[in-house]
Amino acid sequence: MYNLKSMKAEEFISHDEIMESLEYADANKDNVELIDSIIEKAKLRKGLDHREASVLLACDIPEKIAEIYNLAEQIKKDFYGNRIVMFAPLYLSNYCVNGCVYCPYHMKNKNIPRKKLNQEEVAREVAALQDMGHKRLAIEAGEDPVNNPIEYILECIDTIYGIKHKNGAIRRVNVNIAATTVENYKKLKDAGIGTYILFQETYHRESYEKLHPTGPKHDYAYHTEAMDRAMEGGIDDVGLGVLFGLELYRYEYCALLMHAEHLEAVHGVGPHTISVPRIKKADDIDPSAFDNSISDEIFCKIAALIRVAVPYTGMIISTRETESVREEIIRLGVSQISGGSRTSVGGYAEAERPHDTEQFDVSDQRTLDEVVNWLMRAGYIPSFCTACYREGRTGDRFMSLCKSGQILNCCHPNALMTLSEYLMDYASKDTRAVGEKLIENELDKIPNEKVLSICRDNLKKIEDGSRDFRF
Image (cartoon, rainbow, N blue to C red):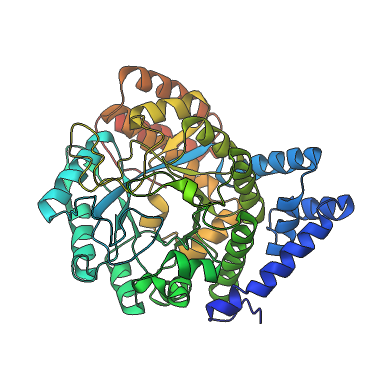
């Protein structure tokens, strides 16, 4: 039985409710009157429920899709402006006891060398990332209670925050590790993490259990209820995501929205981020073995409709995707991207990109400087800002500011100041020239004269060598 406030996975992600919603969507995908009413509701920027949003996803009327895309683009601008937050993944260990059939880290894969960074190696990776200009990391590790216990993760977080290399500093560490206990989530919170990220992979329970035949991840309920335990442990920023291509995309989209609705209803805070990865080629993994792959067109439609249905959430796209796909999907709703990523354990400290321990093939292999340059030439502000997390604007405090549009008063100047730091410390000559012109143009968009004056003063101080200003 469907109950969005239930704490049981099979009740807040109800298979019957999903199937009924998809049937409703099929029955109404050409119902222009209903579709128009749903789009009008979406224009209020309060979001849509899973059933309403499923109707729009099923709709294939070209002019209505164009209207949805235009709305998604405008909602993205209303909530996040033209800022794109930059981050990088940091792989700590590929030891894993699970049997996930879509991941090369699965326990039975004997082709890849197993590797776990010690603290000296973590420090080298962090220094290399700081030399690129990164300020925000998402740490990744396989599930292995012997090799990757929570104590190891906590030690790595402490090391990461402790490395100050030249003008570099990692100011926010997001964590993408396996589902764990309330007690362990409390430890992560105390360690000062930003967002706790956990991909569901698939919400279809039967498929989930087949895709995870062995290991602790096989437990669907324990995995699906992890965000509730994280919230109970004091982590108020959590990130959802499914791996598109494992199951039918309309099923996953509907369930993903149900999960977001559940978090909002129970905890008063929806997902801080939603990631949209697609299954990609990797060692021992052939994506064609999964028969639910989706086209670029459908992928972009999903992203646009996540933005429309959950307007406040940050949306993340990784270097799994090509430059052309990333360009389109950023326009339609994505607000965070990785740049210069290496998905192998210990990859950043190596001069050449290693491939033997990669979790997936990187499609966008440009350097961070090239990605920053590309974004600015397209009219975006690459932002290295971590101010909200460091100022305590997390959870419901962030959401209230975001939903009211007030977050723009902080984020826009913060983005410009952190971009200026990047330009001074790390950018190529051409990127710096493009960026300085962009910053000057963007300053004119700050409406508050006091904020503008402070921002200009801080930009001058950054030019003179000072760092780390924020509103």
